Length: 249
Image (tube, one colour):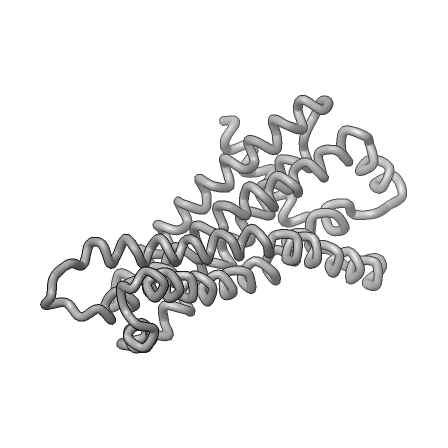
């Protein structure tokens, strides 16, 4: 019953966000602040993860493809599809669940514990709309952009790794990247990016918004939010793959 209770409160929180803004300028300012915090604040870790993710993927693929009958450009094709379909959207969003999710949960949890949310509600402000909605909207704007950046950096990291290790030339790698390219893969990755962005912002917002207790409970809520977000991302990853890739030939 606890699961259904929490899921119901989560849906009510989502429903409560969609009300007419009292002051659009104030909401816009908060949205831009959250875009900066989530997007610019997470850019460094995304760059590092993406470059090394692509590099390791390229070297491991080259290690497994030892046959002379397989052209070396196939390495680039495999790296491209792996990075676009799985690594960039899923791995990056799991990392962002820890970076962004814990920040959202702890920020809202601290406001709840120190009664700042209660004070805003007494003033007649819809706190779900003012505090939660900008965070979710900013995540859905910035995280797909980070996923696109991760795609490019992952492929570039793979190119850099195979060229520096003399596995293949840059021309062979670029030929493999362009070979049999499917634009649908990018569309699928963006669908995953938007879905995961909603998950890793709304679930931590729920746990932070409804936290009860003191500093210890804030830490527990942040940890639980990250764990539940990661599990939800992996579950959504499977559902999206089953729905969108099952009929593609």
